[in-house]
Image (cartoon, rainbow, N blue to C red; front, side, top):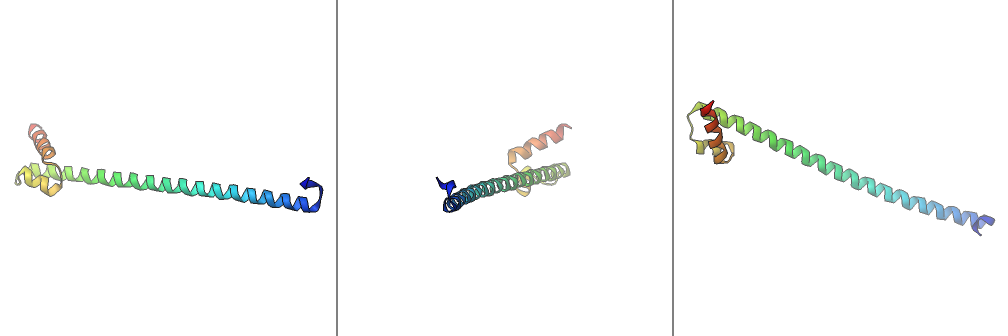
Length: 97
C-alpha cells in the first residue's frame, strides 16, 4: 500500500500531480481550440457583414446612376460590380415608382 509509508505517500503525490498536470494540459488545449474556433467565426461574420455593406452601397450607387439616366445598364453593372440582371431589375423597379 502506497499510503502506508513516506516513500509511498511521495510516489502517490507524484502520480496525482502528474495526473493533474495532464488534465490541465488537456483543458488548456481544449480552451485554445475553442478560442481559435470562436475567432474564426468572428472573422467570418465580420467578412460577411463587410460584403453585405459593400453590396448595399453598390445597389445604392446603381440606383443613383439609373436615376441619373446618363449611363447604360451595362455600364452601371460594370461600375458597381453587380450582375447585369440585378441592375435591369433595379431599373425596372425604378421606372415603376
